[in-house]
Image (tube, rainbow, N blue to C red):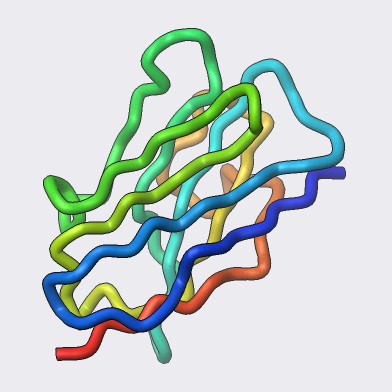
Length: 126
């Protein structure tokens, strides 16, 4: 079993920045993927960003609405993934979830991820 713990959410004004962290513990794998998803009130959970925990570049990938503003990164030794969020907008307000997949090539579908964190609230005021 893999346990994911997110941190770093909060309240920020539009244009501000936040950094989310997600640490994985328990059973881990030599090659896997981690991603960030978000869910706003009344909306479905949506993909934000993903990265592979391999020995290459990780193939970071983003949904179009956050490209150029958000950066996903990883610390393989710490089994931790980060999401640096800059130039935040009110429409970024949501609960942000960390997810892990035993498939290092997992991409944007929620069904591709096996483990989920409890979520952290991000609120961007206008």
